[in-house]
Image 1 (cartoon, helix red, strand yellow):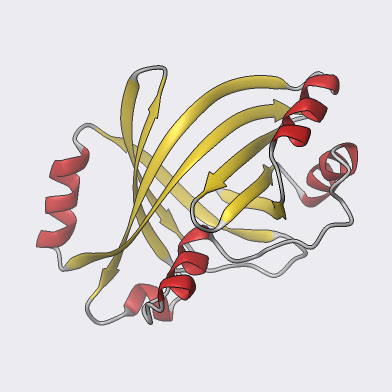
Image 2 (image 1 turned 60 degrees about the vertical axis):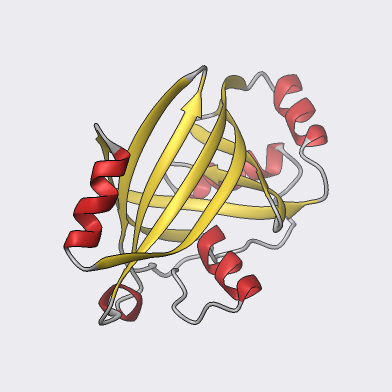
Length: 179
């Protein structure tokens, strides 16, 4: 599966949520997400531009854990890369399995996400302390993403190709940076 997304930093998420409502977007859920990023001692994941994340996500009083492998970034105007995800029954056990295989948790990111859909895209309104507020638009292709960004009046804003983990690692001065 190929993940294609645009990420834009914004001052406030409220005007974007209001705009989504006026555009007829569908609100899906408010999620609390805790992401743990894993690295191997040899640095192979980082050297290949890949990432391994275990997310604990709580929405509507239900918690799930999702293991995600992110492949190297592809060329293009938006952040694009192979992504494979699977739900795991026990996040704590998965952490121990990964550690047993030689992976170490070196970074965590916690955020609140308001998830919407519009025109075939998933729109995430993210509050990521201490990084700030971001809008992510993920869709099937660049043209659809650009059209949604235009409808949200965000098409002319600069896009951020770094992930939250890379931004957080830079802020914290961590040298083993995820992508």
